[in-house]
Length: 270
Image 1 (cartoon, rainbow, N blue to C red):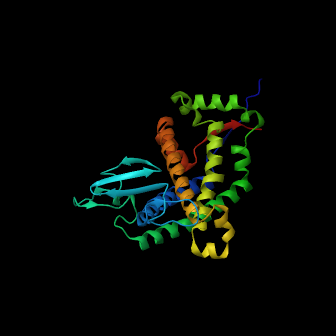
Image 2 (image 1 turned 120 degrees about the vertical axis):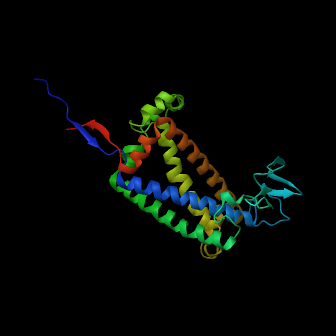
Image 3 (image 1 turned 90 degrees about the vertical axis):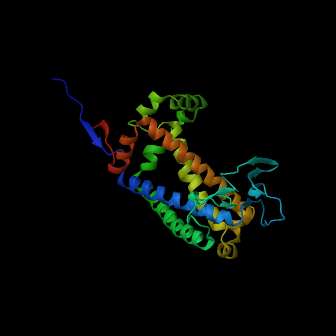
C-alpha cells in the first residue's frame, strides 16, 4: 500500500502578527491624522537645523487670496477645495493646509493634536519593539522573510514583479509563501520605514535634542528630520493603499478573516 503524506495544518498568521497588525493599523491612522494637525501649525518643510516663514521651504501648502496650492520647489499645483483653501461642513472657507476630515481633532488644536500623536507614538514604538523581539524568537523573520541567494538575482526580482501584476497570480499568492516582492516590501516597511518614523520623531523632540544631539545630527538637523518624517509617512500611506488594493484583488473577506482568525496553511507533515 502506498503511504499517503501527512498534511499538517497550521495558522498562516501567528497570533502575535495578527495582534500587532491591527494595533499598528490603528496607531498609524491616528498618528497620520494627528500629525496632519501638527503640520497645519506650520505647513512648510525645510532642510537643515532651522526653518521659519522667511526661509526657503522645499515643500509648502498654502493659500493665496481664494486659491489653495501645494508647492514643491518652484513647481506649484493648485489645490483649491482640497488643500490650503477649502470649505468646512458649514460652508465656511478655511485656510488650514489639510481639511478637518483628515485630521485629529477635526477642529484645529495643536495641543490636542500633540496629545493624540505622542500617546499613540508610544503604543506604536512599544508594539514594534515587542513584535521584532517576538518575530526573532519565533523565527518568523528567518522563515518567512529570509531572502535566499537566488532571490537576489535581478531576473528573479523582475519575474516576481511581473507575476505580482497579474490578478490571477495575486489571488494564488494569498495561500502561498511570500514572494520576492512581498519579502522586500515587508522588510523595507518593518526594518526601515517604521524605525525611521520613530527615530526622526525623537530627533524632532527638544528634550531628545538636548540630551542626544547625535540623533539630530544624524539626520542633518531638526528640520531635516521633520522632512524625512513626513516623506516616510507618505511612503507608508502609499504602502497602505497598495496593500488595500492587493487585499481587494486577492479576496478581501478571506484575507481579512485570515488576519483575524489566523487562516489555515497546508504543509507536508513528518
